Image (cartoon, rainbow, N blue to C red; front, side, top):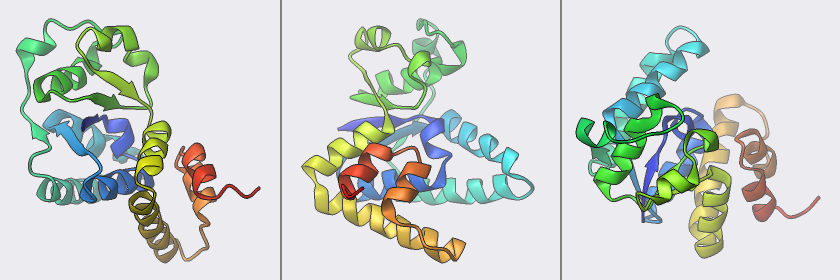
Length: 182
């Protein structure tokens, strides 16, 4: 299954790391373009000085880990597309050119399902996507989450129960699936 990762799902560190670890486990094939990666890097500027440099390093690591993920720009496809936000046409063009199954995004209003369906592309939200992956591959997704959770604890110096970390990462349904208590 090929999934285009929109910049909005690459920018939050915890979400990105879980997604990439799931891809490393072979649960899906990530797809992006240079423009998507550039949007991720630019989005980190609001975090302060040095954040963009760190993001560019993380982008280099992601490129090396997933050399087949990068798709070239397709302006001829982009030119024929209509979306509510013209600045998102490149994401759909990347999905079409790569023969992706879906676009993973938080921006539902920018990617209306009926417009994507005309191109044979689905729109998925990160929480539902990862929960579905977990239902089919519980050990692999749980291992990905646990690796990211341990790293969050190491970096922050504080305890991060999985459910709390996943809720903060906008993954509450996955958190509840992994820890149904409470």
